[in-house]
Image (tube, rainbow, N blue to C red; front, side):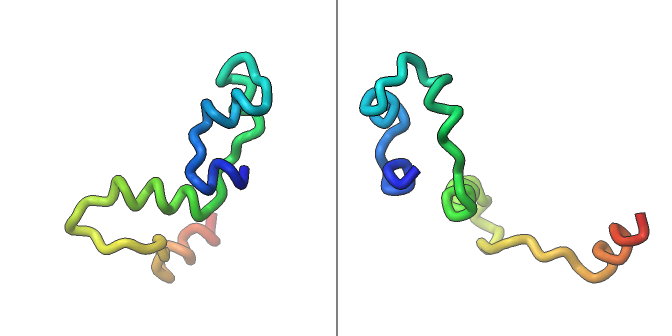
Length: 66
């Protein structure tokens, strides 16, 4: 996971670990919150300011009532 976080390609990691296919290496690769945020930052429209979603109190109260 540390290699992936530092930019090493998944296929290189798979070869180093001796995996025959990418499907087998996928079992061990999990993105952490920082990696997910970086991926989302690349897809954010230019008119939207970056940051985490914070639901308002009205939405939270609605969800609690369910």
